[in-house]
Amino acid sequence: MATIEKRLSSQSLDDVPPKEKDVAALPLPDASVDIETTYGVNEKALLRKLDYKLLPALTLLYLLSFLDRSNVGNARVEGLVKDLHMTGNEYLTGLTVYFIGYVLFEIPCNVVLKLTSPRVWLPTLTLAWAVVATLLGVTQNMAGFFAARFFLGVTESGLFPGVVFYLSMWYKREEQHYRISLFFSAASLAGAFGGVLAWGIAHMRGVGGLNGWRWIFILEGILTALVSLAAYFFIANYPSTAKFLTDKERASIHARLASNSDATRNEAFTWQNVRLALSDPKVWLYGLGFHTMSLPLYTLSLFLPTIIKELGYTAAQAQLLTVPPYAVAFVTTLSVAVASEKLKIRAPFIMGPAAFAVIGYIILLSSKKAGVAYVGTIFAAAGIYPATAIVLSWPANNVSGQTKRATANAMQISIGNLGAVLGTQLYRSRDGPRFFVGHGFAMGYLCMNVIVVGSLWAILRAENARRDRGERNGRLVGVPTDEWLGDDDPRWRFQT
Image (tube, rainbow, N blue to C red):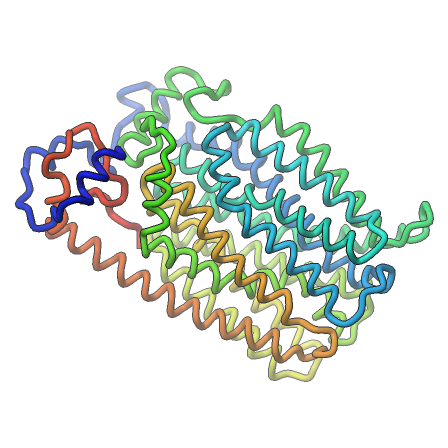
């Protein structure tokens, strides 16, 4: 693969007339295969089996991940800032250092996943962040809080991009986006579940001489640790070694993926393939697409209890009132994913919800009535979560080449979370209850998302049109028929 890429880069092949026999010899990436006739396996039943075996475990891990990173917002309204003697914007700095650790270790974590295995790496990451999350509950000063938040970011950084890559090794391209959206919906469930859980745990204030916010971190961290130990037994590796599959099912999965993607190719890790991702402008645009969503996503998840409390509600009321926005977000995330799946388009189902979320921030910025402003939080959540879910699944659908895709997934999260780094500094305590700066930035980022996604949509459609006209077929001249050029292959079609 690497030698072919070097040979292709040394000459301009787009202008060379294609050899039709070479173009016809390679398997089409979107060719269909009748596995029921060939292997005697019902395809729908096989998909259901994969969903039941893979998705609940992965979704649970991400729910706990999002819970352990966002419960700091619940802890804040229960006295964290006061007990740790933080003043001014020191709390916001603690939020920022989490994303610094997250961004720095995103790509290295996916490289480690490629070099090891999901069954070892994903549970190990979970156990590591569980320990750090629990230690947040016993920190005694601001420095300890900063250190714990940084290492929480480091240890959580590999889960989401790792799972996105992992799912791409099990499902056909058009099947991945719905599964990733379902997986991501755990983020909204974590918000809803976290509000109720924090409200209940906060009543433990005084138990063991500890304030309620400490018990939020301790109990939720212990829960994650217990699940991580079980995860070593219920996380499977790849189809070729998964014990829950029969030989016929394993062969069926191999045939389905071989006709649709690169998942069955035995691709060795090379730094050349990492550089392919780094040099692809489309990969950077996928990252920018998430960057423009991550700021509103994380400012909402981290500050929603504070935003609601500043509207005039008590701490206990604010904890419970975080539930409806997240519940609505869960419904819209799944509904939009189903619609996108049926219509086989992505970009409009990112831009539409992003525009809907803009309406929520307009309400928050313009209304002085607590009840009306609260409705704005529901609109914002209902748009942010489905748009984020689809934008995160886009490179998993469109980037071909296993190492390139793993790198692209990690790059997207890294670039995206730079927006979260900025967002952590926007909701300053003195800006409440209207939070003009924070809400204004979130709204502006959502508008930019519509522009970025619209531009990427146009680029991908134009590239597909060039390939339909045969303008890229020259890339296959002189290439052995058993080689695959990833998403540079002229028969690869981008999902738009």
